[in-house]
Image 1 (spheres, rainbow, N blue to C red):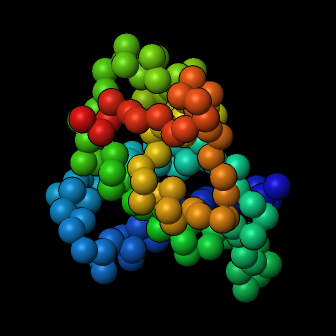
Image 2 (cartoon, rainbow, N blue to C red):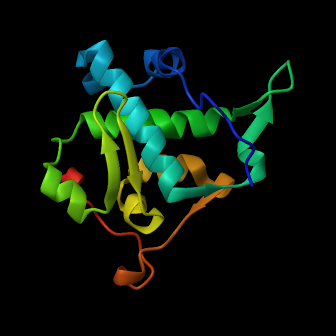
Length: 150
């Protein structure tokens, strides 16, 4: 199990990632608040949907656990993907398995099975062997699609 990481990815980490990312127009067009909110939701979704392996983290110079660059990239890709979608309405979120949400700090709780369907394909690829996603049992064990992709 991954050790507790209090700040999985910062806005500065995301800005650094997107500085060299091709076709990140939605990120660049977003306000700082929108970027922060997208990143916070991306972290909540990935952490709810994925069980990370112990080697998904590395120790920094002070011995504190931090995410590997690939995992930070996955959080960033998820944030970009969210910015490119229309925000679902409250009823849609409830249908997707949101069990708790707050507005100020953009916190949300999902059941693991429901949250995995809200993770973009690029984030799944970046996580790779460093974590695994709970399959959607209602879809015969396959990952389900999400209305956010519309």
